Amino acid sequence: MSLVDLVMPKLGESIMEATILKWHKKPGDTIKQDETVLDIATDKVDSEVPSIAEGVMEEILFNENDVVPIGAVIAKIRVGANAAVSNNQTPSTPKQPEYEDAKVVEEIPFQPIQTSHFTSAAVAIRFYSPLVLNIAQQEGISMSELENIHGTGQDGRVSKKDILTYVANKGTSSPINTTSLQPQNTFVATTEQRTPNTEQQAYQPPVFFTGNVEVIEMDRMRKLIAKHMVDSKHTSAHVTSFAECDVTNLVLWREKIRKDFEKREGEKITYTPLFIEAIVKCIKKYPWLSSSVEGDKIIIKKDLNIGMAAALPNGNLIVPVIKNADQLNLTGLTKQVNSLANAARSGKLRPDDTTGGTFTLTNVGTFGSIMGTPIINQPQVAIMAVGAIKKRPMVIETPQGDSIAIRHMMYISLSYDHRIIDGALGSTFLNAVSKELENFDINRSI
Image (cartoon, rainbow, N blue to C red; front, side, top):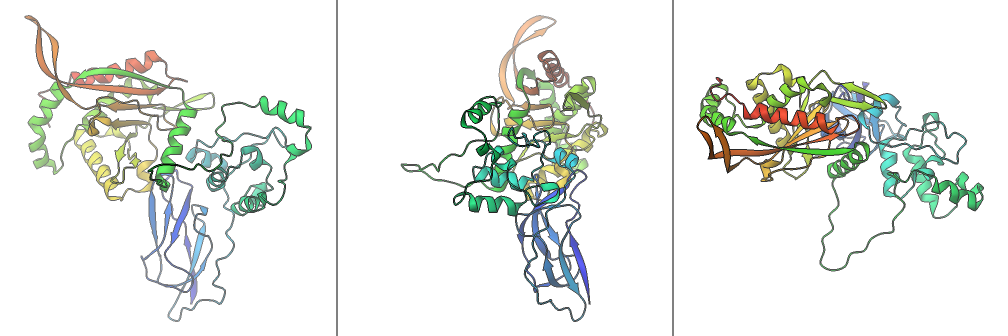
């Protein structure tokens, strides 16, 4: 008999931790090889973790809702012909995960950490795990309170146990807060000097609704989406520009070749790969549209990884990423778009499928909208929306003079980060994409 370690699997190149959602096995349960042991989640997708061996669950090292670093041992499985479980079947006290601060900031770029004005260590930035921050938000704990909670984790970090203990004792004893040592007038003056643009909201009493209402609890993904959108607005100075685009040639070409394309490639060709192809060509001319901001530095991303926003059956939104889109021809783009869209709808996206994007396309026209003002997908600096294609009478110029003709028209919009992209660059890029689509070669071969 021997013990086999079950570790938190690697979920993608840039993913450093995952949250345990549910254990399907408990100590003493028999486990078959490749049988699902637990469900985990990153900030992108949910996944199942299968057993790497056949045997009996000996010990569980982390509880549900714990945030665990990749590679950490999360359970032990006893294998062998006479596998038996030890008497101690109670899950051990969860270990406080160790984090590499720089990498965590990359994965969770929207956790504003403000140092307290009332602590002696005000010059140091204190790290908080996503779980601790979520508990603090749900319990109405302000950042100043959080900074004064004594942490028992590594380097004095606040663990889940620490914050839950603080919440349990909050109503029965006065919190240990150095602000209480300050004179009342000093406290008020310092509070007034704080930056008003803070994401930590003061505690609000429960809201009671009257009348005929239905209250629905957000699921985990919807909460993440909501936070991601609000954080993006607080991070980037959003500006949106619009352009009108005549896509008649593109529409007619697709109608002409789509049956032959599907017969030859076994794939349906949609408008999305055609839009992505045009975007990639224009980003090569204006590379700042594929960048990110790190402090006072602009990081130009030479690998063009294009995200495409996709609606899930439950109404949530996810953004699969086409890696190195500039190295794919139209057939390759079509296959990647269809593969990722199908995986998103069936819940089979891998965590790495949603990371590393440098620019995002969203098709609001799928649902009938003619235009939209999308929110930037951080840490990117721009996102393009394409509206519904509509037939409209338009004035066109011909060698014989102006005439009115029925054309396939579409609005496109670009939301961009005004910290580094000015209106001139944003509008120039948008019009370049418009011209690329308008000048589509109707005689193009497949």
